[in-house]
Length: 349
Image (cartoon, rainbow, N blue to C red; front, side, top):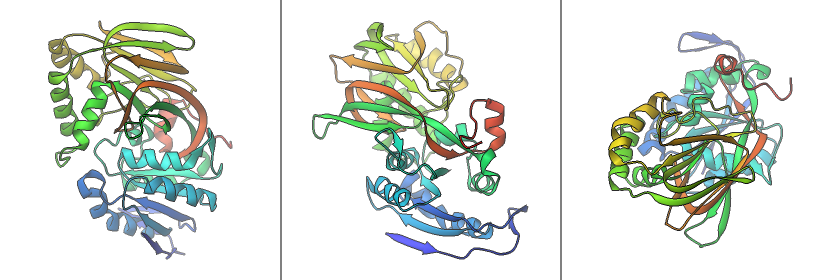
């Protein structure tokens, strides 16, 4: 379903009391109205009004089912769209990313992605500083040299449970196997009305209580780095996952590397009383039972049924291989956030 609005303003506009310059750019918005238990659909009219008041022409594309966002994003990029706005959750963002990247290359090197998070996790947007419609519009309206960067993505291969065969997807934020994937599956089959923090914390506690560690073999950059009992293996491009947990406080979106964490097969009491509270503050790094490596490629094998999630969606299972594709996705950021991180620069500057 496609709804188009084309009412660019020729006058200076006001956004929540802040004056912004008029724009003539067309924003192509991919909206998942079901994201966040329907929050995206309810908020979209307000977002559209804010975009119009900022002077943008808007072409809105509403998804109706899984895979729509990928198809729409691919077609828009091929047709020459310069700015695509994703209005939805982390899963919607993942679909759009997979529409914009193909065969380890951008479908259109001039297309950039902007986010207005409306789902449960909102984790990639935390790293970008575009946490709401106001911050996103300010970033889109600003100097592209300061607000557009090229970030890495991870190419992830795994077993698709629907076919039993190997499948490959791109991941912009975090992929993990084990407890995190079990939590994602639980969250996505439950109500998300309590919001990201409570939903993910409750889901994590339930998953920890139910879990038994898996025997795994983890290889990275050509060597075996872990073999034994594990509860989770994480590959982080961004800093946050699971509704705000600081899983990789040192991560850069633009360094051509991933932060890999192996959670050893520690007891449930240690997980619930020590490690889970610490990961919200990013204080788990270096703790007993947590193995950390910075890698460019890695794999996970297990004899057990170990699930995989990426960007908040449970997609399959092991064996899993992960490779970094450097600086392939152009994305809109809040300049002050990336200036503080010092990790990304405009690819065209």
